[in-house]
Length: 445
Image (cartoon, rainbow, N blue to C red; front, side, top):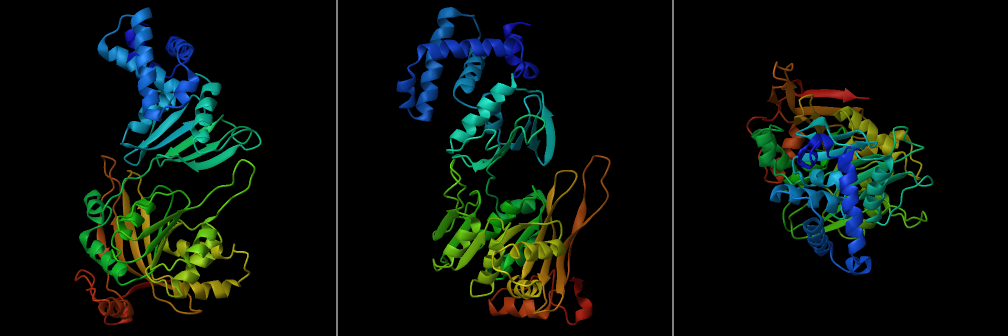
């Protein structure tokens, strides 16, 4: 195959054949001609410019003769290999890719528009993939080896990275990179079909009236995206403290304090958990607390904060339905070192949680709000959920799309009164129930 074909063909870009040898050869020549000590003193952008200039001189001196486009592609590939993340570098620059999944050196998948596809790319070897992984984790002062075969971290540029290697992974080193999500407004989410305008007005009123809101959904349903959009509805004068495992929220208000958990260092010390941050946030005079995701004992602290003067707080939880979210909160809260009986946790959730917003990712990749439910129970009563909005999906059409309609149901009188006291109108599409018979209520044990 010609050099032109090897450079241009995606099928060959990560192969083990001549192309890998070509890139490796120029990488070796590049390393011979640069001063590593001098390079380490340069900023990353300057380092890349210097390498590209030196490599350009090498190609001009030693050949081969290439067109301008071919020369640029070759320089890019060699410098990416020497300095960046090799074949992953163009994927990280592709804004349409939301997730990169490397299942060993031979299988690279990406998610675009909610759909997963395999790319015709591969690493030259197991060793090259490990070098890329080590380069990634070293940027956050972490290491990965047989004694520490799992790493979960956030890159300085915002991407979330998870690594698991043999012997835990039987398919070779596995690398998952989740892109830093762009901040979307609720109006933009309406344009995507994630919700409708009536639901937007209702959610805006609930946030302004300081209802405690839990955003629930499975992995990849858009919980953080919706949480960020809802957080944008908080009045600008309030003191907001955000707490996240990996910082993704991008609030635009002026009085925002961002806290991020810290993993243990290479010696296994220095870990600061979400729970530590939630506890500390209560001493920081917050008007609102926004927790990126509750996944352990911090749920108890969050629930206590919600029910003791920090109304209007928001959080997300992994769950497949509104009922499941309540059960999961109860289970997570029981993981605290404080031993509290389940009935007491049940009371705490009834007292703390006001609204559950359920998100679902459908088979066609669309992410939608499939339910907004109000928790309308008290004390030791069984959880009583009142659905005020839901998405009624229709069967998949021949073109692989799932369509449906958003339905709206009356609000309970108590919720409507609370909105009224906060000067927030009840959207006409919902209205207020005149009797319990008009409510779409169900119990969750």
